[in-house]
Length: 154
Image (cartoon, rainbow, N blue to C red; front, side, top):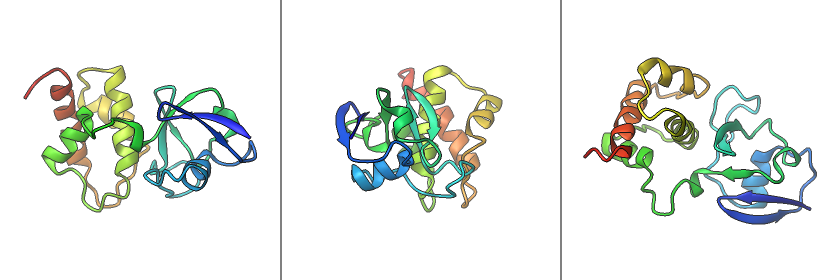
């Protein structure tokens, strides 16, 4: 048994320590918002936050994150009112939506580090998140809008 803190709750997971975190989250904890994309950490669909930093859960072992704070898309905000989520809805950012949990968590981590990111900051932070629908311009606009919302801008 491995003890994980996921979305603020301590959970016991019956998993070997080398199990990818993605599968512990999806299969053992039934949190299916985190998606499987490539399995080799290049697409970003499986992104979760570990101690506030974006991590590819498909290549991170469950044992490696014991004792750390893990946030999935389900735990980003209790009422889906995180500034990034609000901006995504306001600007209709997603198209198919498959990559969006990873995109949103990466964007939230960026805004936690930089209150007013530049386009270059956004491009650098989001470079590992692939959107097969090509909504990159809307994602960038969403991050800028989320920064305004976070500062109290309407």
